[in-house]
Length: 212
Image (cartoon, helix red, strand yellow):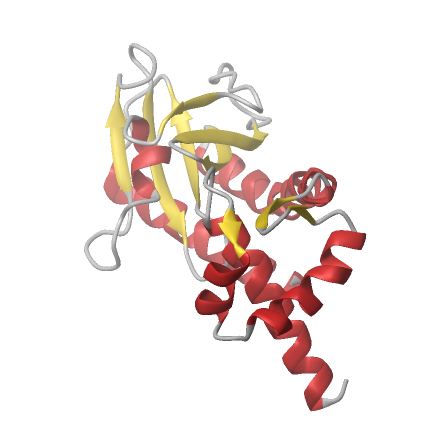
């Protein structure tokens, strides 16, 4: 790809991100031009292919995300789930507890991949698609964890009476707010399980970066 083509692609992606960041408030052409550091004419040119592919929807000078973004998003979770499964399987078998990958969806945490251990007599049944507040439970709170310290979050009884969880954030993957964790009806020794969960989160981040 030529330097000019690369620059156009970069600006197109920046424009798409700027439209997404505007949220419920549709951005104007002028606002988008300021945000990406381009002229209004350049923004109009960039909007043409994005609109043709359904990624952008224009209403006069107002710009919103198009329905084509939903089609792309629909392919993300299955691929993410497939990439996470081997890492979660290894973690579930090592800890003897249900392992999960949870992602942020607005102010909610959603389980997108779950693997149960094969050798335990009983374990927590955690459903893919389960949601809860980002502020409740280890999986949600781990996403807000800053670097430093132990690197994991523990919780007991926050989402289900008697259930304990340990989770660590998945760091360094652009556009992804997520955590890897385990949940059990037995109390964890977080000094043992915590490092295992952190290692799994790091391993998944490496897998996702390679696949990207």
